[in-house]
Length: 121
Length: 121
Image 1 (tube, chains in turn orange, purple):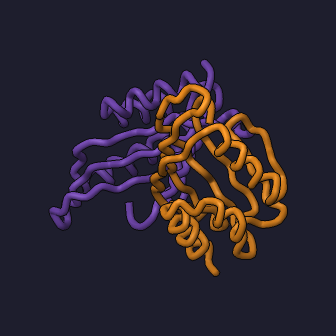
Image 2 (cartoon, each protein chain N blue to C red):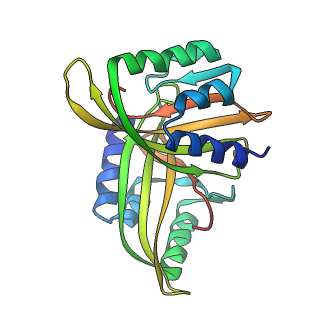
Image 3 (cartoon, one colour):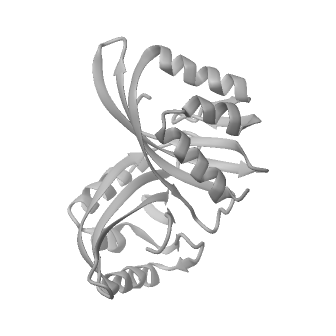
């Protein structure tokens, strides 16, 4: 598959709310995930656990995904812009948070994801 | 200034439509600009000229800017998501195009910008 094929599949699944299907089927076993504070989580299961923990703290209502976007100088990457509609369970407050994700693809699997955002996600 | 101060000023000026003020006052003389196809343009004046050429081909109606966004593993960078409301002068067709820009800051000036998008911009 091309990076574009992987990226299109990624975006399609996210738009169906199937983010965990993405993680289970499209992530490399050794994926590295980098949060906004620079903290790295390594390995498919720990990365899935990180999202499960996020889900435990936040009720998820939906998301929008813009992209995928590309740059020829980084042919193994695609970029998306997410907005997430969530309620913080701690406060009951419904908010929208947004972020940019940069994804690196090798051998048709996502080997690295790096999120850029502002504040707490 | 911190990268955050530079990024906040950048976003503020863009939201006022002052993109050329950004290029004239916030770009390093040796800035490198990387378009979606990977092509690099080096130098403040050539980069400004590139935007002037874009303006010659496209009537600009407005833009939205989401961000700035950050990642602690890349403390010298900020990221934004743009949408541009333009009319292609060649066709008269009004469209919205969007892209992610990754900016690198050194000594309070932007030394590199890299755009990720899909299709022709």
